[in-house]
Length: 404
Image (cartoon, rainbow, N blue to C red; front, side, top):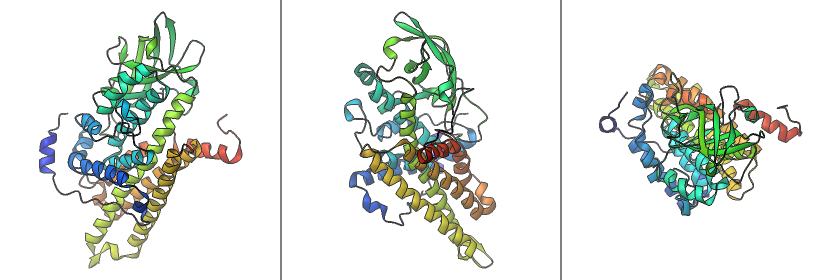
């Protein structure tokens, strides 16, 4: 379905009055640069996303026109060095940008997360200089849209059992297999794909649209992330030049390193969704009159709102501290798992409680809550399921591997 985005912005130009809660004065821990990043992305979301996002979700349409805009405002690889087109910013800046995008919609944040953490990050960290110069500037600007191929139809939480593989063919390799639940897939220009070589070793390959045998069918009938483009990556004897293999990594370390970066961004992004639900619930509780007074005057509603603010504040502190550890190069995968798991869980709970405060209006597209709730049902599963992150923490605590 085609949507008239300019008309939507014109007719839905009511003020997006969002202002984030900051109960523990976390702003005082942020630099002026951090606040500039936040304000820039927030203003863009208010202008470009808030007026159109409900229509996009109702129609299950990805607003493809925003891709170069995301590049222009620096949301694609803000942590990538400037020599490759990135922002050269720190990880807290990256997290703040993801928070503001997900305040608009999880699907919009997913577009940026995949581009920055799952496509640009592995090319920057594991690619050759030629690969970096060829792909990163175009990905940073939004000229190219990228996707990340790890999950398969038969292998999600167990990527080591992947079936996608390639064999040698002179200066090329022949790639066969399929990946599914791939964000950006239907519109991607390139895909960073993880596959096994003839010796069974996992390696990363950059597959380009237009290569014979490479197709990207769209995933339909989603109840969640409906404004995000999701699909498959299918490889039918695709000839990929050997120069497109990432030379500086082998084994599952490659994709798992990428996932750590993406999970970090999600730990911030989920706070954005939680804050948007909380903001909506507070506003409604002050305005909705029942039994002669605002429903916010009743104890049960105050309990809900107080608990929401408490959980948001705890999540903010968790994300901020994790950001400082990321910038110091000290963050561990288990610390990232804790933040991703906790912050998505509290966001989903806050969405559900906010929906209760709004009553029947909570399911209406006039409010963002049900959209956030449905989106978060995907966020709590992807980049490692809720239970998998629990086991990662359990292994850290006990030293025992519950995966095998």
